[in-house]
Amino acid sequence: MTKAGVRRKGAALGLALLAACSAGGCGGPGADLSPTAAPASRGSPSPTATSPARLCTRIITYWSHRALSGDTYGDYQSMGLSDGQYEILRTVVDAARAERERTGDEGAGRLIDRRARTACEKRYRNGGPTGGPWG
Image 1 (cartoon, rainbow, N blue to C red):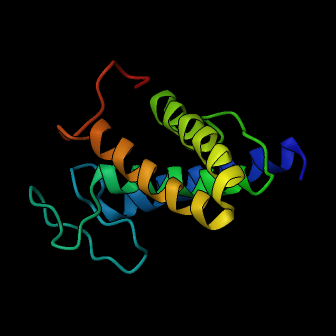
Image 2: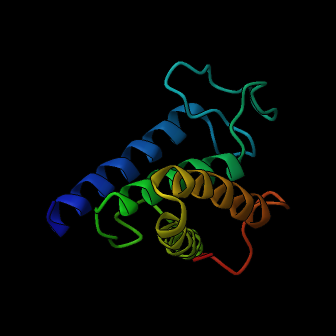
């Protein structure tokens, strides 16, 4: 796949996430991004809400598996990532490539899932990233 193709898909994913976020009311911590989720009532998160850390984990895991399968990195913005999330992605993919050499694709997949979850939980442990608007 060409870089332009990856960027188009990344941009489409980013727009889809933005649209889901707007429709699902994910402005607060824990909003559910699934298409079937009911909008959260004002001031209180949905009981089936998706936290910022879980959303981060989903998107980092998705792009990590794509990068490991041979797709190249795109521009972090076209992937729908913040600069900080992109740093997590690069770290996870680098570790997954090394793990794949040692244990194969299955081990690399488990590492991606584990490292993405751990890094995103750490990043959003206080409800939001730190380091300014690009974090």
